[in-house]
Image (cartoon, rainbow, N blue to C red; front, side):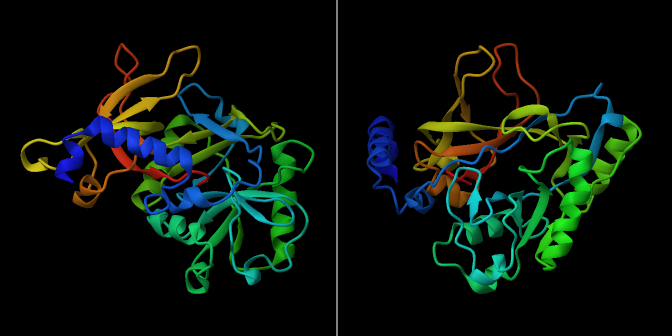
Length: 299
């Protein structure tokens, strides 16, 4: 490890080459999975005060792996085939379902591990739930899709297929109180879904996420060697934020939030990582950014 960090540029170049050639299986096994076709899923923007809450339904934000049932097979957000046991989808209808593979509050890593397996672990899948929150092919606004979704899940009648509960809140204060309660119980946050919205496979304000902190994703472009107690291992990741809203891509160092094991074997160059932060500085760089986890390609 010490030798690698004495030549970070060489290490970064080598990893980038391995990524491009598809030879990085030992570092990122999920990258070996073949993409079938990326489904056009509705993606969320971030909630901000001033949103007319009377227009939205509220539900818990489940900390799992986004999943899509296309009527025949299960896929991740990135289009990777999810190899669930045959019993998990036995009897499911041809109707497409948008949802989340969920292993319980605080069990994100277990959910990811289970979904990534090319040979399904039957025992692990017994602890999984498919939390259904929309029907992409169903016509009509979301308010009308809710009863259709509930009826479909009732028809499936399996304990591991769950219709996400949707409800209303009267004010920003009530929303924040519900958020605080959910987080205290171990939940990740809340989601808002505009009642009169049609299903659109893009990111827009019809779907909003409500969390106690902001988070985003960035691509690892290099490693910075550590000093002092971190000598000989990772000091920080050099990451790049994607260009967005007419703003150019920007790079910054992500140096906190890592375990000892992650500093010893850091996310490789090319990996997509999720970080949390508290607002942006004047140059647009996240303030107090802290590493959360690697977001596997397709997950």
